[in-house]
Length: 107
Image (tube, rainbow, N blue to C red; front, side, top):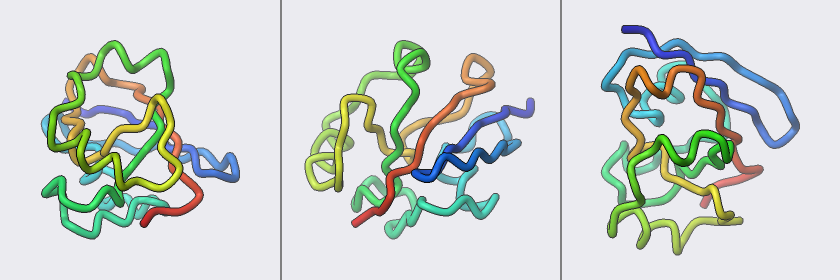
């Protein structure tokens, strides 16, 4: 199944990306060339450079933040309440239309 995801950058530019069910949000972003997702560790939950801000209406549909993700988010720049690591979000049918914003910078 194809899952649609909306990425909004810090300047407000909107990009709609089509991805496959089961891919991570980080994979969808990097394959589509979405700026603002550095993904330095390649999805190993070891760097926090794929941080996104999840639109609040989508947060209840995501699995809870795991211990590893929580630890990595401690190092994320400009962490917010809706911050998640894109490598830890697997795309599923219930996330079709998921909207996230990328931070101005990652490190």
